[in-house]
Image (cartoon, rainbow, N blue to C red; front, top):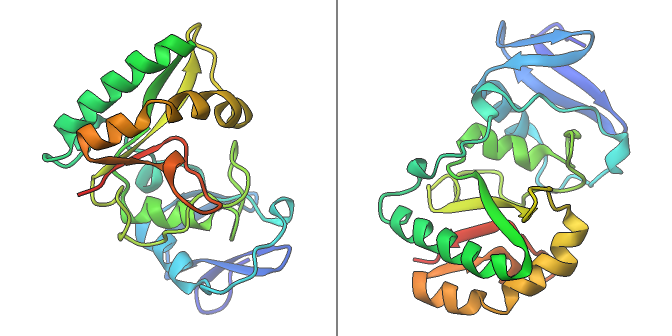
Length: 210
């Protein structure tokens, strides 16, 4: 729906999501967002209330596709120059240890642009995204380690190349990592998301502690 002042709205289960403020910055086909600009997405997230209730995931509209300004950066070369050497060694040693349990870790994201950080914050709050369920991140600005180029996320696979889903990660991969990760955290001055205190565990996440 397009309002008279140029705002694009997508109606969700609990209200309207402002996707865009301005003109000719977003394209929709059949009611679905197919292209957009980074500033359009930032406008949407900034317009959202920090204290908004979290709606049932299935009631949310589909979010924009993970292309262009919100595509994931996967290259380890995009990491901070001071963190990259440690990240390379950490990943190598992580995989050496994981191989004993029949698993391997592969980097799926390093640097995260402000627009992508905003997009990920919106998942589970403003819209749904394929292959994801619920809240993805608590950080909606550039204060996190990814926008600072000081973090990377991995996906876990079995030795035969089969992708490992979240249940198996939690029940098998994470316990295996927990046995040796303290040594790696100390050796490379990093923090594993699976070691975080509280209710939130981010098992794919590794970040610089400095």
